[in-house]
Each structure stands twice: as C-alpha cells, then as structure tokens.
Amino acid sequence: MAIETSCDETAVAIVENGRKVLANVIASQIDLHAKTGGVVPEVAAREHVLKMLPVLEEALETSSCNWDDIDAIAATKGPGLISSLIIGTETANVISCVKNKPLIPVQHISGHIYSNWLDVEEEVQFPILILTVSGGHNELYLMRSHFDFEVLGETLDDAAGEAFDKVARILGLGYPGGPAISKIALEGDSKKFNFPKAWLEKGSLDFSFSGLKTSVLNLVKKDDFNTADVAASFQEAVVEVLSEKLLMAYKQYPEVKEVHLAGGVSANKRLREVITEKFGKFAPAVKFRHPKSMSYCTDNAAMIAAAAYFKWMKEKGGFSVSNIVPIASFDILC
Image (cartoon, rainbow, N blue to C red; front, side):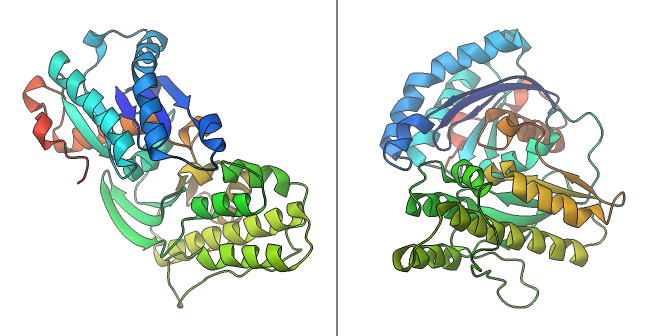
C-alpha cells in the first residue's frame, strides 16, 4: 500500500509485485485550486486531512484486500509541499506502527520514473534513458539498474509543466495549464509564432523555459493574437526542446535499450507523438515507453507503490517485520 500527498492529490494505491495495480484511488483538488489559479498549500493540507481516511477505505474495498494482505506501507517523503507531505507521511507512520508493517519512504520523482512499470508484464530492459517532465521538475536520467540513476540534465529555471501553467494563466485558459493548452492548441497554427528555444551551450542536456514564458508574455502585451495559435506555437517550442534533448542524450549513450517518458507532462499527446516519430527510426533496437494509463502520469500512489517495491527488493531482498523502519528515521526533509 502506498500513500501520495506531495501536492494537491490525496492518493492511495495497492499494487502487487510492483506492477499489478489492484487499486489506485485519487481524490483530486483541481476544482478547488482552479478558483485561485494554483495550489494554496494550507488549503491543500486541509483537504488531505478530510480525504485521507475515505481514500484509504476505498482503496482497500476496491482491491478486495484486508490488512493481512498488505506486506508493507510506502509513502512519498518529498519533494513537495511540506504541509501536504506531513499528512501522508504521518498516516503511513501510524499504519506501519499499529499494523506492524515495514515502512518504505519513496522520493517523488523516482515514483514518476516507476510509473512505466505499472501494468507491464514483460521485463523492462536496462539501461534506460528517462525524461521526467512535471510542474516542479524536469530531468534527464540514465538508469542502469533499479535505483541506479545518473542525472544527465535538469532544468535551470522553470520546469516545462510550470511553464505550461504560467502561459495558460497569461492566456486566460485556467488551471491546470497543461490540458488547457493542449486542447486549444489543436485549433491553432503551431508555426504562427517562432518562440525561442533555449538549447544552451553545445551538447548541454539541461533545460530552460523561463525565456520562452517571458516571450509569450511580451507577445500578449504588445500584439494582437489568436489564443489557439499562441498555445500551439508555445507547445511546439516546448515539445521540440524536450524531444530533441532526449534524442541528443540517446546519441551520447547508444547502449540504451529503452527510452521512457514520465511525469505529469507525459500525458501530452503531442510530446508522445514527436518522441515516437523521432525514435521510430531506431526501432527495434530501442523501445519507447510512457505510462499506460493517463492516471499514472499525474501524481498518484500506484507509482509510489511500484517504486517502493523495487527499492525494497533491491535493498532488503524481501519483506519482513524485522525490517520495519523506525518512525524517527522517516524524515520527509531528506
């Protein structure tokens, strides 16, 4: 069983063997935070308190499991909103103590990475090149084995998801920005505006989207524009940088057997299309994966459960009561 409360989703999942999802319950706060155009931490924390027990009960009911069936408890330890994280980690601490179950802290981004193991029956082949793209993070990883990550590139300022949210706000499209921009972009001309693409120094695998966001803002202030054209052109600029940096990384590490896309922005259909097109020429030498369900792209507990399973199996080799993590060692700030 895993608990995820890093931001504004109260989520509990029960996953078997790191792959088979028995329950993945998510209580969303999107409608609540849409009123303020973004997440208010104190409001999110209060909603977690209200939703936690109902979501836990629903997960057990949906999975047809009882507490004897649960081998271990996992929870997101960070990064995230501290007031939200506390709700999930304290809940996990109490369950671990009362039910005498091992407790597994999981780093949020590693959870997104393991979303690509959910509902997958065949063995995932290492080494893997991973592009993680969400509102708060944007990285390129080389993964040689379970929990063996090398950071190849990361954002120097705004993450792509954050840029989507801010540009959506500039265009008056509401919150969350990613789905809103993707939807209206279907009606626009992606070549109408030549927005800047930050490639940085030659060979760099880092990202920067603050300049792109500012360019959209300057355009909106000075010129007449069609919202759909701006959204489409902006999305195309983001997708081109993300996909091209991923391709650059693959050319630097040709031994890679799989390329994975993970994180909230992995739900973007245009990004999936472009990556599929660019890596199609290398098939079957390299396989492209993205989460099988849209619910595995955004914050969810199933991905945390998958990461916890593979982390525990690598570190401990199995589940036993003697390996319970003491409450004091579960530091959400680490």
